Length: 118
Image (tube, rainbow, N blue to C red):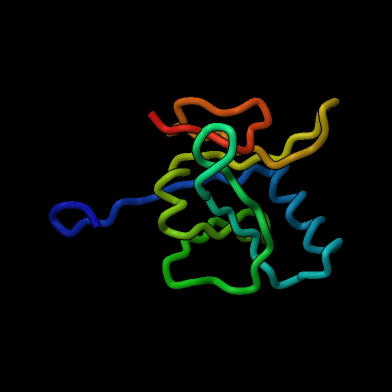
């Protein structure tokens, strides 16, 4: 809640490529009802690191972001650190991975899995 009792809208965008890959992984892993969870934890090369996993449960403090029939869930603490981000799935000569384009991050490591804030 912000001052005056208004709710602050948090936003994370799941790209079409990410939604397709999440759906494919749910089939491969045989977890048709699972959510993809994005969690931020301390560590990594730059101070914080992104983690992706499947989770059967949604918690009271989770925010949910849906695209094309798949749902990404993020706990409230992690959401503070990824607010405004875009979650994409990229395949290139270096491999394939989920990438977080985070406007809050002041820097990130070469692998794209960790970041620093201001």
